[in-house]
Length: 191
Image 1 (tube, helix red, strand yellow):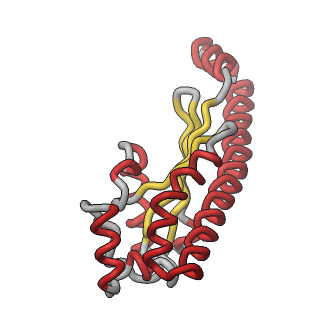
Image 2 (image 1 turned 90 degrees about the horizontal axis):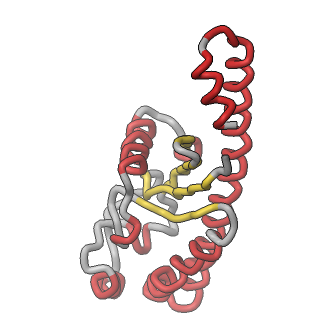
Image 3 (image 1 turned 135 degrees about the horizontal axis):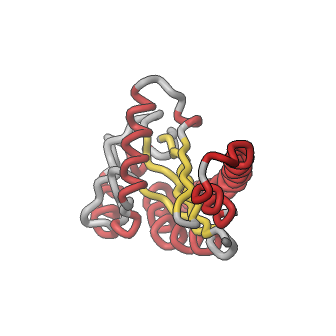
């Protein structure tokens, strides 16, 4: 596909209908990739939420923090076994290993602007196809469950546990509906 697109660009405008067909094919690829990426993000998010809920049932927020600390990287790795690489990032990091790259940072800032303009959090997503790689991000809105460990009024044991595991934690002070972060996915495409 990329070779065809490059050839069309080199040959110029005399193949206008071919260029149009190539662009439409690329858009279809983006649409199918976006559907697959949404599914991957949904699966990853569901597994993370189940893990947090298990921790809450087992021992409250401090147990959930422990599970999130130990299990979230393993869940991301398990979901990255196939064609996709999945993870999470945020403007306010808890885990420095999840720091956004330049595109992720720009996308997170765009999500914040779109949310402030009234766009629903569930609709916030972005994708990019560049240099043989497809990138996708889906917003993670702050839910009521999140406030136990990411809210403004944290219990003292929660604060203590967070400072033990994440000394540079910035992921607190959220309210329901705010942008907590985003799922971020990558897929290398074959030429």
